[in-house]
Length: 383
Image 1: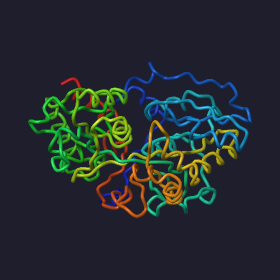
Image 2: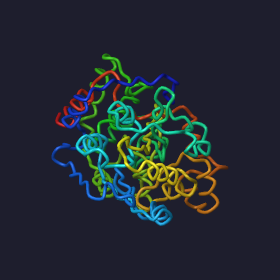
Image 3: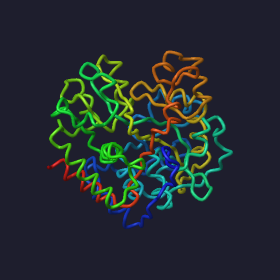
């Protein structure tokens, strides 16, 4: 389903050749040049869990209690971007990794690549999740579960609160305003940036576009070029807001602005009337892992109430969590964090936004290739 209109998700079919071509069609830098090497050292050790994930997810704050309880070491191999994650899995010898954390939009590619172990839903505390997330559609294939949600967040329009009032940001139209000329920054990742522009064009399923809709997206995106202040990595987004190089950035959210605001930078995020995107991080067990039981326990820990509280409050990257039981524990033990993260049980919260039908899942394009979307993004940057 699409959150906004309950439309069935249209998943493209990918061949192995498509996977191998992915490295030539990336939006955040070339895979080949930046791909970390994969070592087999200790991969067979029963006391080492090999974890492929975004940076920071093996922070001792998050995994220390698990390591102590099971007398193991969680060893992370970090990647940046789903394309690099796929390339790493194709490069690595079988058994190199036990657990992978991936964005939900890449799950069908992992499934098609035969990387994932089918999961028993009864092994995981899905009943503790908010009802909307107990059977998250991007994690199930033909009735079988292959991944478990660990955290999520929303992408909309982030802005400098000293230069803009919330009522000026009711629509993405503000990006084209004279006031924004030379002040619109872009996260250099085609999916969230183009996804928000697609929403602004009235596409309630922003990645499921006809040829005519894609051509209209092309024109709308190109019309923003004169407004751009630059195209930024994650680190550059922080500095561009801090030094006022950019005052508006579509396609990012509280995963960035919350940390900046705690540091005194006057920024916030809104979901305009046209809607926003949900990013979703998920854990799966690799089919070739020799430590299936330990991998299962690691996902069980991460999705337990305690594990969820730690995921939500990680110092360098706070997140929303799908576990209602995790919310309850957070409100009981860390009420200030619950308020900051808008995860209070008796106040307006992030689940209310989900239920407002203003949020669409971030996905890979359904009817065009990744190359076509990346080519448009490259053309936009070089225009």
